Image (cartoon, rainbow, N blue to C red; front, top):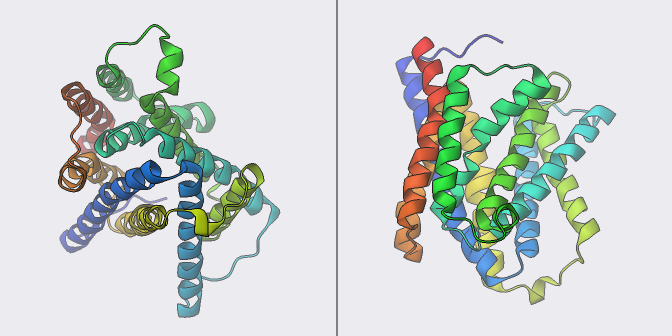
Length: 303
């Protein structure tokens, strides 16, 4: 695939879309935290997936009606890939729903950005995309930041860490990384738009397999509202903005812009929730973002 080349005008448009995606990610975690404080996180995940699935399906139908995409036959390979992606989707969203109960929104967004490094690592193991030395330096710095965020371990050590909000957030980042690596592995054999919609509906089906279907009248109205807002700002509009940014910008620039998401979250969460991370969490988050950005910045200098 040829590299993305952009004129100044296209670059400004791409930067605007990438900034919109970062803002969407920042806006998403505030209602996501509120939803999971009010009610059962499992119900929040169901509401998030349903809203995102309906939104993506309606968008796909609108694109077909406008003639911008063509209908694809649901082949066995596409459905199988979508099912695997659905597993990562369900597990990742459930882990983030539980993690946000004990984490500040900004800290959750910092920890989810670890997916940049996790994708590169598994891309090396599974796809043969060998990272360079700058990746390992950045990864080491990011791990140091993670240690600073966690602070001192208690008597249960690693077990307690894995069960904490930080551990669950890293698990969510690993699941979302699985989405990216799996998509990249099968990208030449699937239609991403169609598979994305199928993925969300299969994730809803998997949720139903492992959870009793709730009576929506028993779910607090505020939880429904906040989960829906989280789905609209993050998985739907935020993802849509990111896809549009990719039309005008190279991937590394888009990723660098979205690293501003935790910074934007700080201000939004403070205004709405009066939430502010601990000093060691702020310091560790800054160290993590610095480490994550190192491999991306190197690509920029080489280009």
